[in-house]
Length: 264
Ligand code: SF4
Image 1 (spheres, protein in one colour):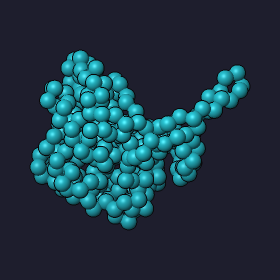
Image 2: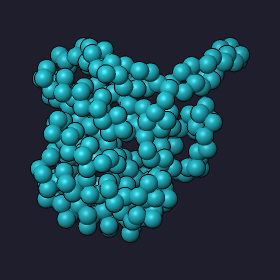
Image 3: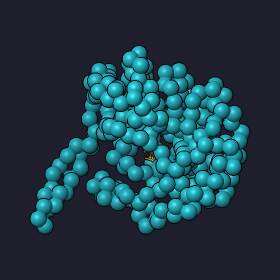
Image 4: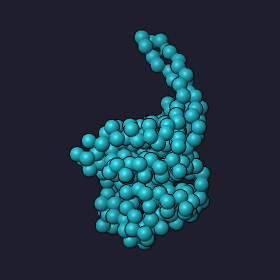
């Protein structure tokens, strides 16, 4: 079975416990205004023009972003780092894009890793059918689950999809004692409003088994990428929050008794 991915990052330390290999799946049903990886949204491989500069001269090269890979080939790459996983309590993280959009491929690669003693983690928006969530939850060790905006209208406006299914899936994982670390992208003027933060805190309080949330600061690093993919960056002039503001937010979430990290 083949899947489509666009990158593999070795020795990642922010995508779950220990040292990890992160596999980036191509394809995402969301279109968040702040997306750092616009190359992840289309499930198909895409051609872009990369510009390299040397001695003041520009060299243009057409490259394809995204490629097909089989479960066996991907497992070979993942298992190449197994020694580091074992030493550090790490493993593999499937990210994207949205890995649940290729759920059959995801299930097979998780199964192969688990059979070979490799810890697996799925970094997800949570937007999937109940059937898919349940199937992957039976297979993986951990979810990194994004929580962005609680109000449906705002979620629809800033991500392109409604939030109901996502919250329902999160509740199901919680009620069924699955391991979940929440991730909250702190986007200035969009997700960091008093109202949204208060609603997120209330939602977390209504859950029983969540004890960790990572706050993901917004970075304006993707202008070049948006230009290469001929997409408009709606957040072009947005400034990131200061370290002080991030620390204040950390204290606010810690007051709920949660373990809170900054950065994923
Ligand atoms: S969910 Fe992630 S990958 Fe998908 S559009 Fe949003 S930020 Fe980008």
